[in-house]
Length: 566
Ligand SMILES: [Fe+2]
Image (cartoon, rainbow, N blue to C red; front, side, top):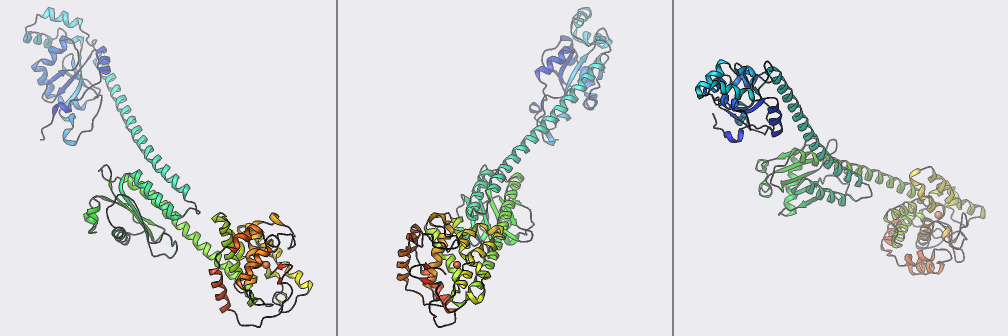
């Protein structure tokens, strides 16, 4: 049997309890399996005689297990003398080998009035060479348990034990709850912070960088990395990238190799894994970088998106299941964000593809306007950017540019593609296209904000445009931006009625018409723009256009007085 450190195993009872028990006539004592009884605190002389008597101790030794197992029922050692087990004031955690209950216990020594004058009392006096009459007088003055009350006192102590046990259970439950609450709070606040920050207008690159850095700090890891898979053509910005936070002295290429191996070896539905010994993973360089490793797969339903992995706690402890749970929760949120972002990207691609197809099919009705909407969209976006507009607005301007002529779908093809001069009635039909486009878009909630660009792109700064003949800043900004881009494209590309104009001549014309046809401020930004990409698009579209004879001016294109109305 393991030798025990008796000093550290002695149970204690609080001073308050000792004093209360004393008032009840109960003496607190430490009782050992070998029969030794040591009184704690102050007690009467009688208690000292009893506890020190060799024949009392031999009886205690023989009945030790009975005292240990009987809670609340006083065990009679002598007639009129009982021992009853007491709860210790504090239970400290002990290992299986150190359980003090096996060898030593805390007990109440109950000496009843019936003990005085009994045979055992006289025998004790004889052994100690006391004068019996003097001893009896001393014993009667001590606080003894009234005759027949020992069992009742024992029950009181039992209730006290039950209350103490209940209190301890409640305290432990409270402690556990409070610790769980703290962990949940930490987890929730971190999750809240990031999930609220996972807006689509936030670039994934910056979001993942923040998540990895913050998570490393909260979990207390020396380093944490998040690697994304490279097998998806979406998410160009983050595809195949690794994000590292913390101190890891190795090349990024080494970390990438580790990440790829971990991705290859994990399945999408695998739970987080805590590796206490990285030697077991069979990744040669890893044990030199970290002893403990946390590996959390990022996945959607059936495929891996990436992997979160990190190692070594800053306080040299092991990575815990709580750390793993927190990282898993955040990894799930990041995976969900990335998945949503990819779905969003898919829907945007499809949406834009559909718009391009629609507008290209309208432009293609007349081979001379092939690519017109795409070029106007690009020029409008460049102009909006040059004017310092918000990036989100700039993208909406692009879309508005793309659909600005969508109303031409409602203009008879014979009029739209008529090679010769238009009659006044025919021109009136052409002038309907902004309003038709506006009506088409008004049925699509997501495109209603583009309507000003569609409806007002033929208005003029001087109020001589159409359809509403509004002027200056009354013309919505989208209309002014697209109107300028539209006129520039019309002048710079071939039309049924003329060839394209020289670039410098077009720029001169824009400057000349600034303040008449065009917003003068926007015109200043426009003429300074880089048109390299625009002319590359013109060449591409021209290559796709069949060669046709340039017709004469049909009357609604370029007019030196009226400007451009295409
Ligand atoms: Fe138009």
